Length: 375
Image 1 (cartoon, rainbow, N blue to C red):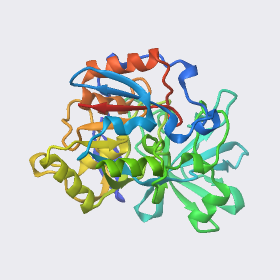
Image 2 (cartoon, rainbow, N blue to C red; image 1 turned 180 degrees about the vertical axis):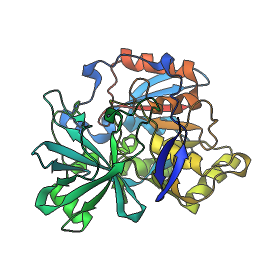
Image 3 (tube, one colour; image 1 turned 90 degrees about the vertical axis):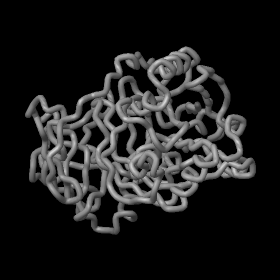
């Protein structure tokens, strides 16, 4: 059945999410392949993580390190990067009955509303917390408060009215300080159970972040260093920035991405169009970058500048128009990110690449290794 959703402060009706057919990309991820700490803690520099390069037209696979990525790029290529910085988006919260929770900021909406997720620590790690009630006020550190206003996109599967399906809330937050100062003092990075201890926010930032706003790190660009970017530019590879502020992901639910704010400047649109006209390749750094670029690309009309909120979900049913290649991490089984990768590479090449990554022991998640998909 159709659902009500708040978008740009207005109620609209949407049809329920129908998951993409990703049974071909269902696999078991061994716990030892889940990167539990930053590579720097493992004795590696940022750009010393492993890099797997797969060509989806030729079917070739190369094993390398990220520091050697210039060998796989060429003059005229355009790397499009997401310069959104990561927030200290997790805050300790307490219900009136004393229940200790974590409040995860997801998306800052118009009207100074927030989309948030509540999670509860358990011996097995954090789990989504489903039993909060509309109208209740959660206590946050230093006298701050969060009032839960309404479920955000409740009953995403269209199957049930059970509260267990209501993972996200619309909330109004009251901070005693400016938000940036408050999060700097009392917030901390969001982490999931595969990351066994907390790490400073510096581990969750790319070197080119310009504007804080993401709940979780746009991690495909984490391995870049200033020196490596300089080498690429000197080689003739152009760097084109955009912004997409990422919301929270839930590893317990395979859901479509929610509306996220993006901004694609005219200079980036021009670099993308010029590269395509000159026969160069447009390579997105991260799935967030793909989502923003595809939102402002209209087939033969090319890519244009744009700013706003995107609810675009990319599957094999939608042809990719803006990019030729993609640098990304390794994604969860049956996740919507894999649907995007399949739209670019096709199911068979992607299945081959993931089988290779599993057999070669590549590491998953934001502190893991990287995958460059090229034509």
